[in-house]
View (tube, rainbow, N blue to C red):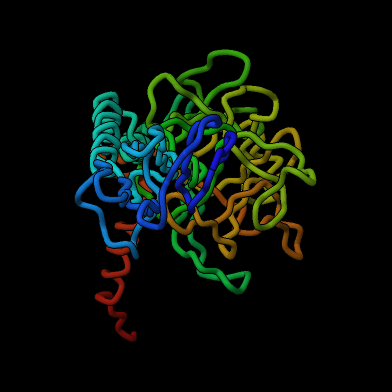
Length: 387
């Protein structure tokens, strides 16, 4: 028998001998039985010829190709018969070969990377906590001594509760405050705000980073001066961050840019101060609106806030909810809702709420509510006697 470069394959094992010269394997007693074992190779050879391989091989039923193993069968007229197993076909999760060592090394690398990111504050949970800490940081509102709104005041924009429901399906009642709402998916992955940032209306009336706005002047520095009806102004918000200011902006709706649920004009926050970030305060009663033009804007009173570029009023849609990073909240858009008398509906009403002078942690809205409750408790005690 003179094979020329021949090769016998048995499963994942290969038998190779030189391409020249005779090879005498006499009779059936010198047949070579090659077994494919897990992580090793075992060859049963004739008497007098031995092959040293792993001794702790599993039973034949569980034999699979593992890492590269080579055994040389010695003896016979020709030596050089090699038994070669398949290459590294599996990862450390497959219990073959040196899987324990590979799995341990992989765990060590993961732990090293985890500790390094934790020291640098780059873990997702750390970023998430930092963002939430900034947005929910307690803020202090400005106190109005004369009862008016001034440029530079820190206020909250609150849509007051109205007992009459003009629409069915209202799921969120009470006083709603305008809040910045970052994208839910992005908020779980980063500690920075993605621009443009969305807005929503929440029931939380405590002044925090995401609900405290600053009244800013346009064109010139007018800090401390009274805000008047018909004057352009901007509304900025820091979100609890330092050295960061975002501006309340809006623009005409398009097919690609509109409110998520109502498909009306979108309202968002951006870091660009332009004509799209200008607003005007308008008196509530349309019959007395012209007479109040140029008068100071009163704090904690119902007003209308119109967008200068599109002439649309800021509105809250209590019947449309958004799934935000902080739960279910109402949608905010720029649209003027008029009734049959051509007057704005309560969803366009807003109050610029200032701080409570007696308690720095509360607002004038809470003080007014407490006064109303006290007045309601005193009324039953008043008894009118017939004359």
